Length: 165
Image (cartoon, rainbow, N blue to C red; front, side, top):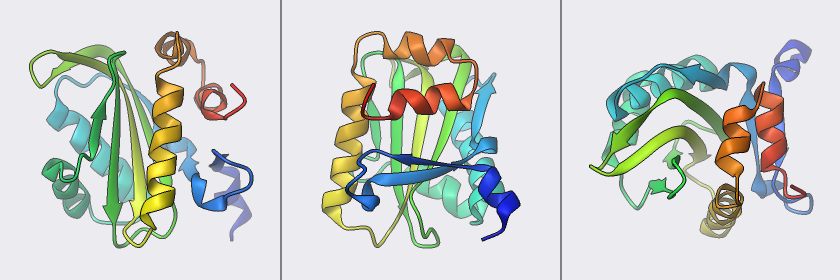
């Protein structure tokens, strides 16, 4: 793999003993955004997916909008976790958006932190559920939203996702 590409990727391991419970994220996948609707969020995620993870914007955007099989998890603290399966993806990846102003989703959920897991379609169900469970537990920790909002850079946000925190 190209060394320049490796310098621009983070590897997040949710479990040091199980490589299936890890994901990659490019530095360009961590953004502070001024978006006003869920459709704008989906469009931004699809743009990042096309630029960073090499699949078409249309496939990605359409896949996100389907919201099949509980692909969107809303936590009470303003965090949205989107997870979706893609045939063209070979490794687990992550996109992170931090909104300048919260948006309202489904009438009463105020959201300003969006994590999107991009998962290969051929992943086994067990590792996918373990990954979602681990991330959900992390996102439910007291003050996690405040810590994410206060993070200065991508490295600080990723440090919050490590199991030791």
